[in-house]
Image (cartoon, rainbow, N blue to C red; front, side, top):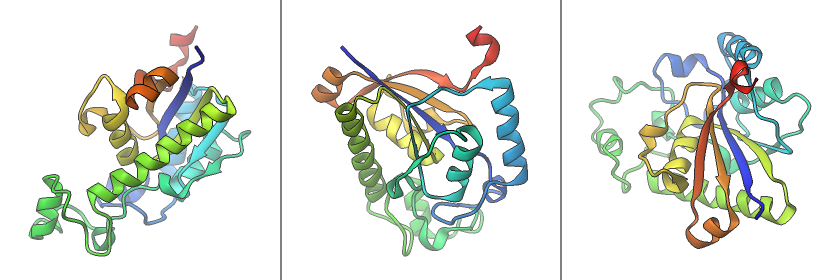
Length: 209
């Protein structure tokens, strides 16, 4: 039976994240270091091929897509965006340490959300609906290999919800420019909405030789 491979890749680095700030929907570009690091990864490693490319609309993702897949026209999907941190955007955990709601939110309280932002529950619901629609679209069109360039929080959450082996979100962490490949088998997907996480990407070039 035909299976569908989806490669999740986290965007390149931005200055704000390196300084410890919460950056969700703030539309900042890749840093010069981030661009250089991606080019080096593309030289040392082999990024997977794809028939279709999906990306978050934020610059750090669309620029990553352009650097790694210059010959593919990406389908930009708004719901692939990172969590909206509202009034916590651009602030560090240290700056927010005295905020009671922030402490509850960090502890995983789904009823709490950043002021003018998005709750954990709303974030998970949004990206899960989006991912399921992508999978259904791939099955309808017969596209068997695709790449999704998005944010670390999106990837970790989706793998925690749908991935086998089962693991917590923090167990799916990845560096910028890296990610995971999943295999969607229609029978398994239709029965339990799960997919197999089978490798990290990209692969070192000598690993493929």
